[in-house]
Structure formats: structure tokens, C-alpha cells
Length: 259
Image (cartoon, rainbow, N blue to C red):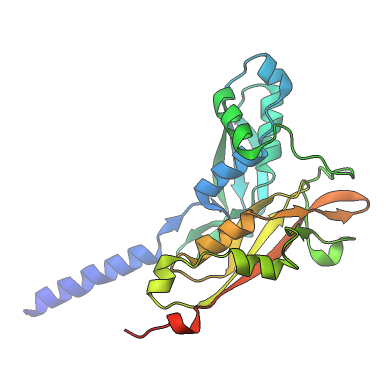
């Protein structure tokens, strides 16, 4: 190949590499966009006045996700009604965010979140989740939306394990469906998830601390979301808290094979 052609090929490859290195990724919720949609469906409580008035439409929130994932400058950019605006902000405050990135460097970035108020979709969500107001518990609920670590609370969140299982580990091991892709690829490993247990015992903001592919992460997330929790308590109130589960994927010894 002539020298000029070699230089051209090298330069083109360098431009592609630099472009990939500087690729910009916007802020993103821990659960991804699909998870964010599910969070809204699980958590939204349609304001009674909005239902009576048949108020429908979109609330658009504008905010800045800082380099550490914290939120600044939250405001209602597109308003619908005082009641729906307040509920959109309440739901928004439950979302954890990854900051924007340029290559491997995090950066502060403005972003937005749309919360749709549709009575038809809300009725469908209520049927799927089984309640139209958040599940009641026997203690007052902290409304600050602060997420607490185990060392800072009075009692930690505890899983509600079905009676036939002795503990959470036994439950997870018994209920796991080994993913076909992982099985066919002879994959073993561990998935560790961190998530937020809400004041009513639901699970949101799932993220991988230790990840493996082959469908194992997705299976671990499915099991994680299947568990109900007794929420953490601080100063006599139910609070949001971080929790973790670990799931080991181990093939039966007689199922292993070599390619």
C-alpha cells in the first residue's frame, strides 16, 4: 500500500478513536429509561382533584444533574396543574441519576423528565400493581425522600420471605431461573445489586455493583423486584434506605461442558 494511503488509513482510524473517546452520554436514571417508566407507574398517585376535574396532560421538569449525580435547580418547565405538578416532583425525587459523561469524565448537565398524567394509563397501572394509593404501613412515613445507609438508621429494611423459605438466600436460590444464554455458554458468576427500599416496601433504582451477562443480571433484577420489604425505620418513621442482594449463578456439576 502506498505511503499516502497508509497515512490516510491511520489518520481515519485516529479520528474514529478520538470521536469515540469524546462521545457524550446524557444523564440517565439508574434503572434506564424503561425502568424510569416503570418507577412512575409503580409510584404515581393521581391527585384526587385532578381525577375529579379530568385533568390530563404532561408535566415537564427541568433540572441539572451534577457530576456526583446530585440534583440542582429543579423547576417545572411545563405545568399542568398545582396538584399534578406537585405529584410529578414527588415521583421525580425518588429517581437516582447517573451524571452525564464525555468519554470517561463525568460532567454537570441540564436534563429533563416528562411525567404523563393519563387517567386511562393510570387505571391500567393500578390494576397491574393492585393499589391506587401507596400501601399503608403502621408507622408514619418520612416524606423528605432522603435515602439512608444501614449505619444511620434505627432498624434496617427486612425482606418479607414466603413462609416455606427460611431466609432470603434460600428463597433466591429456589426461585432463580438459570438464563438460557448463560447455561448454553457455560457461564457461572455472581450478580450483586444495590437498590432503594421505599417507605412502603417497594423496590426502585436497581443498579449492578457486580455484574455478569448471559441474562443473569436481568434474572437477578427480576427476583429483586419480586421481593416485598418491611421498610427501614428512623426516629419512629418509615424511611427510604439502600439495600443489597447477591445471587450466585452456579451450574449443576453434571450440566457443565466444554466446547
